[in-house]
Length: 161
Image (cartoon, rainbow, N blue to C red; front, side):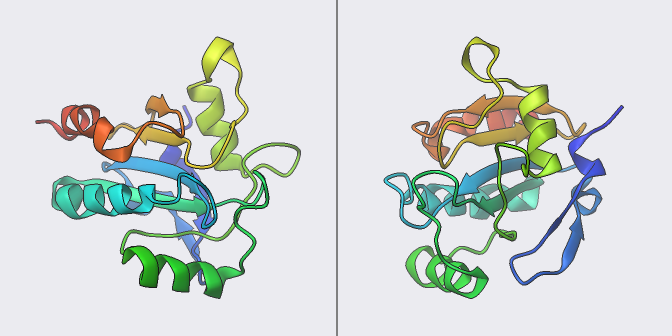
């Protein structure tokens, strides 16, 4: 049976990264954008990363420009923005598509495992969050307006307390 750990992605600097490197960790996978009303959530995502990384939480950011063209930058611009504006230290990956014919296979898996409202699979906007348990299966899907800090109880449960 397929899990999130069966996929790989390119890091923001273009290096291949098998998600099996995170096997056994809890993953918080988020499609991010630098020029979105939800962009300040980078602060909450980084706070979760700093608070729970030593317990096995891995926040993974996937820039996406499919919603309102709100991630227009190249990899260097995205890295600079994240570092200088929000001191992002969690792993960031290369820009991807999350919907449509060119959707990244990881996102195909995430959407199929945990459809949205009324069973729709499509990602509606930037900062949609998927919480993946230590078994590699999607435990929760959270809308863009759900703040990272509002997910702490779910995260703690998956981390085992």
